Image (cartoon, helix red, strand yellow):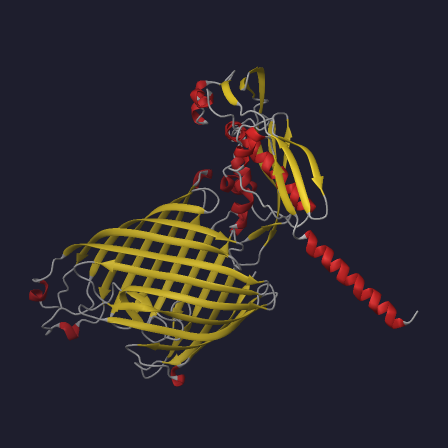
Length: 582
């Protein structure tokens, strides 16, 4: 036989197979019932042209399951007639069953109210085992979360009268289980007492399944550790013991640079400039956070920030955070802001808190105001704010997310008291109210979308709003720079209202290393009365390179705004630095 004849046979075989496959994709499914039940079947929708006979069989199974759910408990497929192009299923549906009664048996009334059981809901109603399953699941879920993880529901006193069913539901609680303790095994990354308080699990507490369900998510939100193995829960002597094993994540940072410049205001001597940043997470395995941030980039201006966070005060779900910021703005003014937060964890990824902020600002050089005819745009005042904040975080990684979202929002109000400066003419204060109410709202929403394995898109919406009869330059938000609006100098803008959007593409070439392109854009309102809107746009590119000891960052950015003008490559900004992690 020639080679060509083999080719012809192969082609004919492929054509035959293709025709067979095409035929299988057009099976006609027909469901047949007796004359009384045929009208009932018309109420149900199903795929009348399944892909193949297996798909037809699965369609019939789903239809029978739906009939059972609607109370036709005897519905079943009697026989099947199938061939190459059709699938005929003969169904018998039977009568529709109703509830005669469902008695609560040995279940207490107080427990029945908690699971929203109503006796009348099962008398003369269509039998629906999905509703029965919901009642049963609510009951078992309540027991699991209140110390009885081995509870079971049984039914007895079954009665069938015609098409009506009656039964009695009883609860076998099983043994009462309490938590023993949380044991940290392997490397002592955190103390067992802290992690137990953080998870809300204490010795002697009633067993609560919901706490275990949230446990992994809550641990994943801690940036300084990872689970080395899946949690292990063991039961012994009516006690539940939890065993956890962690590995440390190197996220503590110390970063600094120091410089010496000649002092322009003096004939001799050197000016010390630079910056220092330190963040310590989980010192001594206690879950605390300590932060120190200092910057001095010019002769007269410097900032200092101090942070302290103490989670789970006295092993409760209450946590405390303190934040102090100091600003010396050249020879104009100083500003102090002390904020204290008290917040409570609401589940695995939500926090609700209250805070108080004490703000004080004082003028430095005032000689130029002695002959002033209008009140200056910076002034001495004291402001005490009280507010609420809410935080939600659902990120795959709290340090460098690839997917998920996060929301932070706060609202505050307080009393502002303007202090008269003796070097400013007293008559300039006559037309203003020295005691006013000030309001402030701040929010930030972050969204991380993983488009592909190595491609993520980060978007953010940030905004702030402050309102008072008297707002001054030393009240205002300070925007601009690497962590705000890229492409502009640090703290270039002073604003009383702003909204900013960020879009950033990140192409990962390693787990924590990526190339990025970004755009920061939005609008703001200056602090001065009558100031118009200032639209801004910052664009650029950069990369982040993760090493065994830290992160190297490089960013090139250009900025444009109504007040600054269009893009100017001579004014482009380059940011780079290396942050050590340990």
